[in-house]
Image (cartoon, rainbow, N blue to C red; front, top):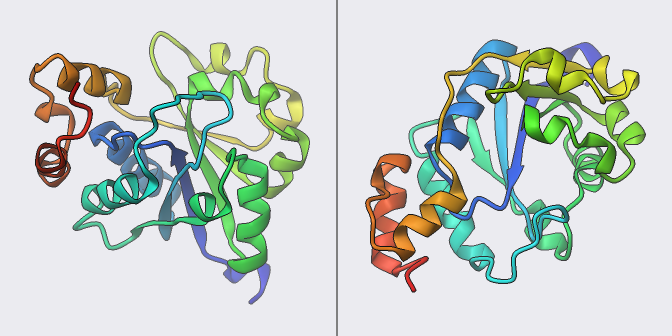
Length: 202
């Protein structure tokens, strides 16, 4: 397949513990504004920058992501990082994806994550494997997001507009543990799955 005929694929990574409507909104905004053919949701085996001992088992997180993206034929979930195990690094995932599924890739992330890109593994190599679809998260502005980002990263950043969302996996887990309402942050199938399996309860 020639370079010009390659598909445009977005990658949305994270622990997805649990996956929420904010994740879905990010994928939808990036797909629409960049004209992506597909968005791959890739649950991490272990996020190297956000370590938690009590990570929900991979099988359940994969199932919840599958439930979240029901009705979105251009969205899919991949177990590439779960299968690899241990810490999940974007550069390793992109290298593997390019080998198995040649495409033009966009790594979807929030501006808070973009600002820490220098902490990621081999950011210079990563910039050659993907563009970044960056979603501004208030109070950040574009200038804030790029202030400490190396020039070679800035050259491959595309900004995505999206209404702010307060959905947070951490807050959802806390609300469930405290017996508070949490359904408004989740799709109905995901909320039902959590209730059925009694996830995040103390």
